[in-house]
Amino acid sequence: AQSVTQLDSQVPVFEEAPVELRCNYSSSVSVYLFWYVQYPNQGLQLLLKYLSGSTLVESINGFEAEFNKSQTSFHLRKPSVHISDTAEYFCAVTPFTGFQKLVFGTGTRLLVSP
Amino acid sequence: NAGVTQTPKFQVLKTGQSMTLQCAQDMNHNSMYWYRQDPGMGLRLIYYSASEGTTDKGEVPNGYNVSRLNKREFSLRLESAAPSQTSVYFCASKDVVRETQYFGPGTRLLVL
Image (cartoon, rainbow over all chains, first blue to last red; front, side, top):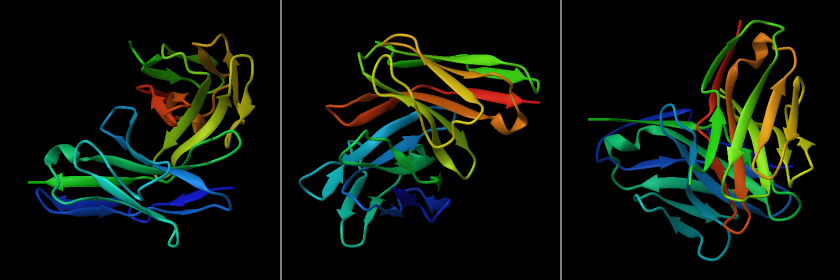
């Protein structure tokens, strides 16, 4: 079975500051890793994913995440946040094999203030 | 191309009432899912359907039933609603090539 830990339930930052949202996972098999974003009163949207290849993956709006297998982590970073990045961010994993169900962390609410 | 649609957007039920949440996708995906989202608990899988004609229990199936009506539609039924089922319910479908789930806008359910 898989589990995902997002230790920070809320992260307040000022606009244009850097941010890191932490994600650690546990799995006995190899997994794919994802970050989803949920804006207020909306469904979840895929932000970025790691399937294979380069361990550093980027999104179109400036976020990046790095897969670290030895530390079983997939932290999300952005060098300079905007007010519009205020949202809830969910880390998720799914195993390579079998029917691939997503297992989500409990989410981190990013609050960007002016 | 609407993606994943869900109806209704909001619903208030009394304890013991029944209702069906509807979900449809127009992306020709085989796999569909129902999740519930509760504060501080992330999303938990209720039921999923790997393909038309098959359904399986997820992490929290008690009190729910599902029907995969056809490839497009996957409904979730509460036979006798309880206050513990107050939640936001999300339907999703999966693009297996891109290994990506696409979510609907959600249904907010309040059970009194």
